[in-house]
Length: 475
Picture 1 (spheres, rainbow, N blue to C red):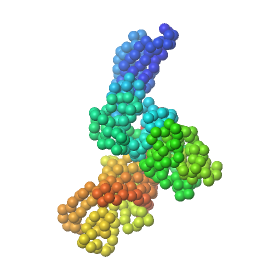
Picture 2 (picture 1 turned 30 degrees about the vertical axis):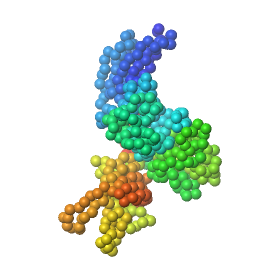
Picture 3 (picture 1 turned 45 degrees about the horizontal axis):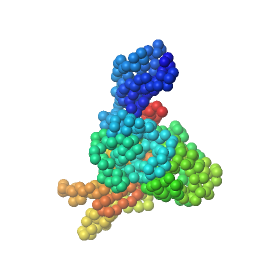
Picture 4 (picture 1 turned 135 degrees about the vertical axis):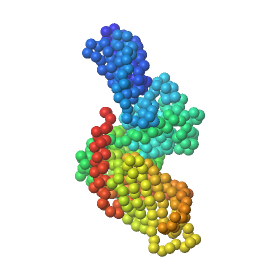
C-alpha cells in the first residue's frame, strides 16, 4: 500500500513496518541498541534511526526496508560496566532477560522512573515505584524483600519470564533477603546493579533557584517533624524512610497476599510519583493524608486543618535528592545530646570516598582490665572509610588497637562493622551504625561543631544542582 507506518521497538532493538491499508506487518528490521528516535528524509526514500544506547544511526532504504548504512554518531560517556547495565535494563532482546522479547525493566521503569500503573502480581496489587535513588534506600520492593540491587534477578525470572542473568537458582527462596547473596554471581547482573546505582533524583522544580523550599513548605516541615503527627518516625530524614516494614492499615485488601506490612517508601521526589500507597489506591498526597488514613495509623493527620494539610503537602512536594555530599562537610561533628563523643570527617571528592573518625575523650585513665573494646571505658577511637553517592556514604568500620602516643609501636586493625552516614543539609546528618563484632547498633543525629564551612558546602550543593539541571536526560 501507499500508507506505511514505521514503529520503533526500543526493548527488542528492531523496527516494525506496517501496511496501513491492510493493517498487516510487511517487514521486521533488526537495529542497534535501544532505538528511540527516527526521521524521514524529505523525499521519503531514507529513514534515519537513532540507536540511543549504541551511539549510532541506522540508515534504512524505504524502497527495500534494508539497512544500507550504520553511522557512528557519538561515544557514550559511561563506563563499560554501567553502559552494559543500562542496555540490559532497557532490553528485552535476550531470552535470559525476557520471553518472546516482550518486556524489559524499562517497560515499567522508563528512564528508571515509574509508569503510574498498578499491576497485579503474585504478592498482590503493586504500584510501580520509582527507582531513582534506590541504591540509597534498600531494601526494595513494597514487601522490602530485595536487600541488594542484584536481587532483581527474581523479577527478571518471575515477571519478565527470562531465564535469568545468573546460573542456578535465583537465591530468593523463600525470600531474597533470606537467601544467599546474588552479588558477584554474574557479570551482567552486577553491571545491571551498577547502572541502577547511578539512577539519581533530578532537581526538584518546587524549590527556588538556590534549592530552598517556600515559606509554606517550611510551615509544613514543622508539622512533619512534630511528634504529634509522627511522620518523621518512619519517614526519617534525610532519606525519608527508616528502611523497615510497617503496617499502616492499607494492606487488608482481598487480593493482598504478602501484607499487611510494607517497606516505608522514601518521600524524596514524591511530587512526581502519583498514585500513592502500595496498591496505587490514593490518587493524590491529599488522599493519603485524609480519606486513606481514617484511623491515623499513617500519621495523626485527622487533626489537621485544611490550611495545615496544604502546608504539609507543600513540604512533601519540596523533598528531593538535591543535596550531595561535598568537601564543605569536612570538619568536626557531634551530637549535642551526647557531647562525650565526636566525629572528624574528611571528604575526598576526586576518589568519591569518605574518611570518618569516631572518638570519645576522657581525662581519667581507665583501668588496665578495661582494654579497648567497643563500649568499654578504655575505648577511644574508631575509623571508617568508604564510597559516597548523593547524600549517603556506606563506610566500613575498623577498630585500631595497640598504639602508643608518639611511639612507632605496631598496631592491629580489626573489622568492626559498618556505618551508613547520611546528610539532610550542610548542618545536620546522622550516623547509623552496626558494630557486629561488639553486638551494638543504633543511630546518632549529628550537627556541626563549627559553621566555618557551611557557605562552601551550600555553594557546592548549588553547583551540583545546576550541573544536574544542565545534564539531566530529556524526558
